[in-house]
Length: 437
Image (tube, rainbow, N blue to C red; front, side, top):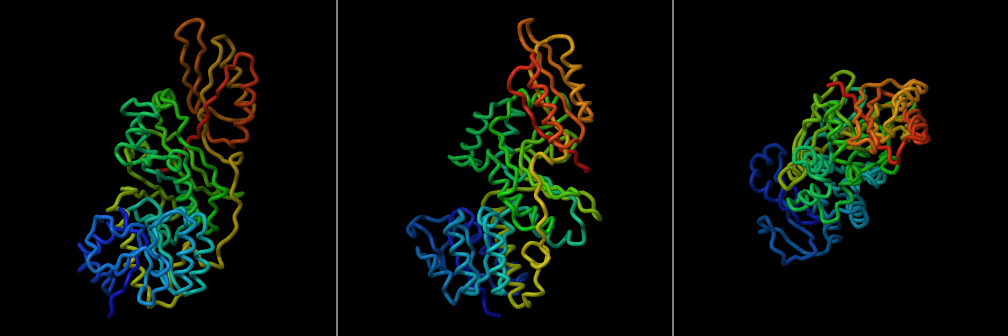
C-alpha cells in the first residue's frame, strides 16, 4: 500500500521527537500500521534553525496553510500549541479532508466540541492522546479498555511541574519560590509558570478526562481551579503529622445531582498510591464499577514520552483510514448523539473531607467552640492536631481534618470560626481525597 504522508505543523522538541521515533522504529511501526508513515512536509517559524532530528526528505517551509491544503498530505500533525492559530489550521485541515493528530490540550479543552463535530461531519478523525499526561495512554484506556464500565471517578496528578514543586517542598524543605526556581532551572517549568502553578494546565487536561469519563461536553469553563502558589511549608509539615501528603490533583467525580470537575491542592493519605508519586511524574486513578480502581503512571511530558503518544495516534489513524466513519471509536468515547449535558457542580456542592488550619488565642474553650460548630453542621472529625504557642503571648494553631461533608456546610463552620473574638485572620482550607485503592 502507498505510504501515508504526514504534514507537520511545528518542529520543536515534540515534533523532532516524533520524527526521530518514526525513523528509529520505522520498520516496526510499518508492520503495526500496515503502511509506511513518513513526514514529508513541515511548517516552522525559522526554516534555518538547527533541528534535533534528521530533516532529510522533509520539505520545510513557513506556510502552515500550504500543508493543510496540500492534496498529497493525508494526516496533519499539529504541534504549534495555543488555541487561536491552531484552531484555524485544524478546522482548515478537517475541511480539506485531512485526519488530525494533536498534542494540544489547550486547543482540545477550549474548542474540542466544535472540532469533533466538524470531524464527524467530514468523516475524519482527530486524535489527541498526547494532550493528556504525555506518554501515559490514559485516553485510550478510558475510551476503549474501560468502555464496559460505569466510571465513578477519576483523580490524578496531571501536571508534572506542580508535582515536582510539592516534592521539593516536602523532601528538600524548600519554600515554594525556591522549588519553582529549581523547576525552571531543570526545564520542568516555563519562564512564565502561570498555567502550571495556577492549575490551568491541569484544568485543560481534566476537561478532556471528564468528558470521556462521563459522556459530557468538554466543559473547561466550568472547572473549579485553584493553584499551589499559596501552599505554606507549615501545612506540608502538619499534614505529614496527620498522615497526609499534599498533592495538586485533578478530580472528576459523579454525584447524584451532577458531576464534580475540580483542580486544587488535596490532602491524600500517605498510604495511597497517588501520595507516593514524586518529582515530575504523572499518575491517574480511574474507578470503574466493574474493574474497580486502576492506576496509570509515567512521564507526563518530554520529547520521548509525548512523541510516543503522538506516533501511536498516527498508527491508529492509519489503521482506521479505511474504516467506515460510523465504525470508529468516538472522539469522546460516547457516540456524538449520546453526549449529555450533565450539571457541572460548583464548589459549594463538592462532597469531600476537609482540612483547615486556624490561629486562635491560647485560652480555655476555644477547641470546644470549634468542635461544637462542626457538630452543629453534622460534620465528623477525622483528626485533630493542636500546636501550643511557643510563648504565652503567641497564638495557638489548630489543624482539623473532617470526614466527608458538603463544602457549603464547611463554609458555614469557617464563617462562624472567623467571627469568634479569639480567632486570628487567615484560615487555611484544603480538601481531602478518600481513594479506594
